[in-house]
Image 1 (cartoon, rainbow, N blue to C red):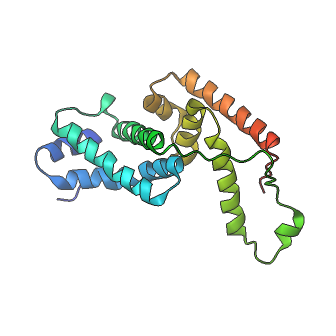
Image 2: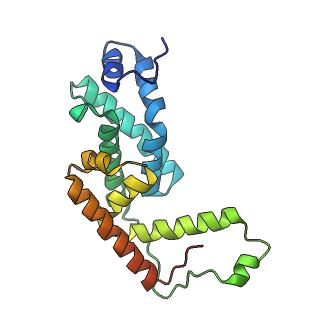
Length: 193
């Protein structure tokens, strides 16, 4: 049986619990891109992201089979909370942090832009890496809001569900995070082209 994308998540969960594995496959297909991109944005490693992505759905299935269902009926928020928890667990275990040295000059000069080997795609990825490195330097709550908004594409309202905070708190955290990101760019003399 093939399920339509318009079917509510709760109904797909009921179908899965009643013995139809295609219902879970549909949920995975619906949300895999957003969940994976959030995980990858946090861990910055393809293999680790894939491992955590699989673990997210193993935990979801284990919870469903144990009788625990999505909080407030929002499957995506529930899955992102589990993903976020697993990423945090991974970072605590690995103790890996990305930090730009203070003496590192990350500015791109006009001559480098004109260099024949520097393609627009390379500029995009260099800029992306610079921004991601700076976001990684933010305090955990600010980093979390920025990653959920920018990389997972969640609205502030959706972020409040994942982080279990008010809309005002999420908005204030986002504003403070953006201000701190600007300060870090100035301090590290990072230029984004």
